[in-house]
Length: 533
Image (cartoon, rainbow, N blue to C red; front, side):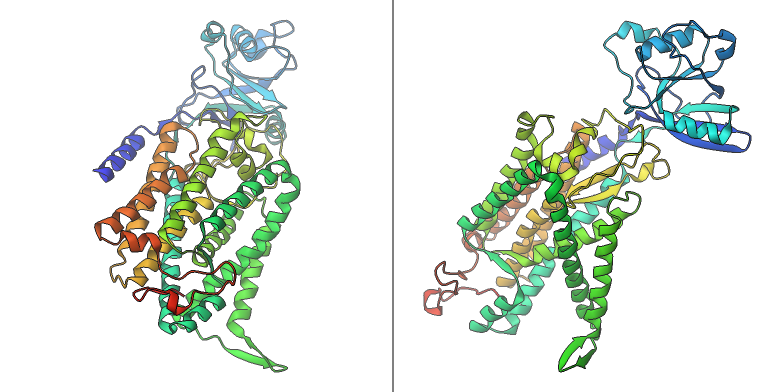
């Protein structure tokens, strides 16, 4: 029933997904030459044709007056034409009414300021407007004049944009595959380590593996407190710390990418090859891999603000980073999983929903840090768009997001690329629980991997509900609000149904003494305990 309800919600959303976009297209032509430019309009006041073929073509002219009144304008010059005037001195509706009185068929307002769709509190005034009204960049009009001269023919149209873009499906695939692979990798490493030795040997293998285990509730609280502190520091000292995080990500992602590629090649049985220099042995495969991974990281760092294609490298490095993090950080028990995920759920909700009441611009600290200082210029509620009037200097952003451009607007992107985004935390945090479930399957020797598979399915359903909530509400959602309950409740339910809830809750008896940082002695372990690597 739960699956049917989710599919029903998505189906209804798909069937009602065509929306009238506020970005529209100005198609200018002269003879065989043609070009498209970005415009914005309020479709509720001045609806435009949805297709280029259905749009009416008019000659395009610009007048020097601001058109706040009809003085100085020859009606014969503008009658039956699309009119361009500069922004300023009076409202958009005043200009539109004057243009309409003079016989113009369309009014384009050229702007040197940020383009925002025309809106008004005076409904009566706008109800009198019968001609299309839109804003365009003044720089675009200057470019059009250079290309076409004064002989320009214009069409305005606003192709409907699907509310559900295929990029959401790509993002869903990326997140689920990353979580599943990270969990599987963690379980595979655990099985390999257990098979390689027992007792003290296992402990030694663990120490050499580089994995980090969170086994104490106190350490979990400290970990979350550090995250809160770092987020607040980033909010107040963003312009400085952003470069620190970029450098850290470049290094960490290169190492993670190397680790992922090396594991794949090892699994495929690819020979490593080696040579010796001054009694030091070097692996040819490792050197080649290191060169490739470092090169990818350096290219990303150099072109990180290039929107058109750099998202591919950022997502590749992000996937590797998440995979390596999920495999490396090990939660020792379901108790620790519950404490960590619950605290991070509160953390996510607080910094997304509560902090806007305390910030000056009304933007949450989480959004401000993730999207950068210009986060307030993003879409709000899916209804309002802002298009810069001039090329903007790229703002540095912290690489903590998976980004996939809207595929439905791939050939347009006249007003700027739009992305579907997902934070690394929405992959890593549930992924740590999936990894624990995968290791628990190894500890109980479950051939069907029941815990791992059920947790992966729960994550998939949680992501689907997250995207459905985002589409229905028209605003971004803290994904952990849905992912944490789905994964925790599902895992606990499976353990309860199998009668393994106590063992699942406590994990194994492998612990570390705070004083000595050494494993408990064999005498202090229960006879039926399972010791992980």
